[in-house]
Amino acid sequence: DGYDLRSWYCWVIQSMPEFPNVSLEQIHGALDDAERRYRAAGQNLREIYEVRRAVAHFMRDWGTEEHYHHLWQAAGSRPGYVWDYETELERLLDRGDAESLSRAYELAAPVLAGDRTFSEPPVPIQCHMLVPLVRAGKATEALLAYRRSRRAMATGVYRIEYFALQIEFLARTGNLDAAMKLVDTRVCLARTMTRLFGVMWFHVATAVLARQFVEAGRGAEVLDLSCGHASETVTAAALYESRAALALDLARQFDARNGNSGIGDAVRRRLEAPRLADVPLSRLPRQIRVIPEPASLTPVRNLELAEHHHRMLEPRLAK
Image (cartoon, rainbow, N blue to C red):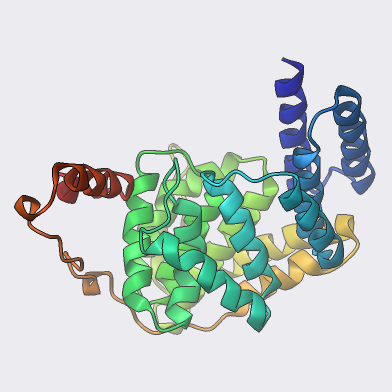
């Protein structure tokens, strides 16, 4: 019970930076307290290093992040845990330099191809790589990652940031109406959610979409954002102005707490990012993989293939 309680404590601390009203003193004070408890119990400090790395990442303190990343890795790994894999990918994408982006592509490639699997669907990797894949000229791979992530998210509970990444991908590849439908599925949540870091990224994605409506000559189009009993209609142009302002205001609050402009810079980059090449959702072929005839395979290999397609959320192929 003590072990589980200390782990839960670390999870709570890792969530604290996502609320701008939680001070740095509170965050680091809680971390120091957790570390004292871990050391007193003789428990592996892996989770402490993981949270210290995550906090440094949030603050965009890359030197400290690198230090605790090495300590975290040295303290033990969980090879079948998709969230650890996401950590490795996200830190590279957020750094954004050419070397880090190259390593991110290498890290994601076996997951996107289905050669690297986990005990849970690889939704985080698929969502993070949507826009980078299009930038790299791999539109078909991006479409496949989008389709697979959407299937998995239909039956699971995922953070609003992943929906935001999908909305941005659709918006910047010309799929405006599909992106608007996805906004509709989460707009109610964004109005009531108290985890403001996630809300901020949803506002960013919505603003990116609204901007694409404007640039496509559809700025005067009225969009329906009604949620339950609350009715709201707004033009695309007005939606861009309001959501961009909300996102920038939240980013300002995070930066004021963090003492730097890291979050605001990331938000502005996303808001100002240009449209990508058109990638219609209909472009993805229904079947892009050649499947051997079952009769030509051994029973063991048939079972392996069925398990693989089940993990990739391809029930028709699994049969």
